[in-house]
Image (cartoon, rainbow, N blue to C red; front, side, top):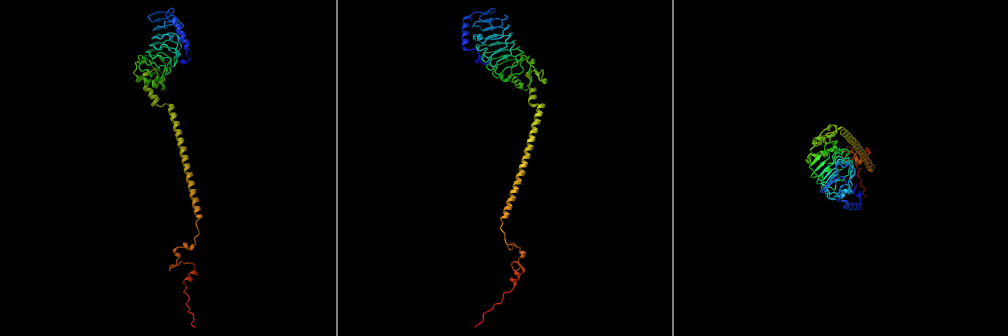
Length: 335
């Protein structure tokens, strides 16, 4: 649920006014002294009313509280310590801690948490210690869960249902020093590789390092997650599994088929081009031959057909006419 879906400003003003009236009282069956309210083990089923507005330390542990009302908590603007461990709280919504922006210590361990909204702790920029351990039904956390908790130094995630974590969720935790991760069913698959790399390069303190182990896959069962980086890198980056070989085989077959088809098409196009070119050459030669003019045969006679005197040798009567002596010259008679 987003902040926009939370209680309106009118309700906040009304609750604040009511708090001014009853803010100096002490909740029933609780002990109040020096800005500290202790309601430990009072079998409370709901958040206690009449908590003084000046409260800085509030103990609600070991009860049966199922919900933390944002309206009541929002009035405690000076609250720095909140202990809600060992209750029945099922979810933490985005607006739950909107008014307690000075909170430094928050303990939500040993509850029935099913959901932690992505921006549940986004207003807690002063938060130093966060404990959400022993919530076995909390299976995942958003990568925005710790987006604005830049002062966080101690984070306890032991004994939850967490199976994987997105390393981007820890990018803003520049001051984080201690991280507890044991007792979780970590699935050390390829998507978990980036988180193992984060554990190596962040140099965090892992007091329960040996007990934070992988559950899956079977090859890494029992491996500490802080040391699972190298085998995961081998399995996910350099090592090829059965599916990888099948994929490579299919890719190779596709490439071979595509190359064969491309070569066949190239050869077909080359043959068609050569045939078209040869036909065009033949058509051009026939056209040129049809337009060549007829030339008389004697012009192209060979030298063998020429007479020894330099005249061409034609037919027999032509040669005789050419070789006959000229007729005698006759002079006219004198008168």
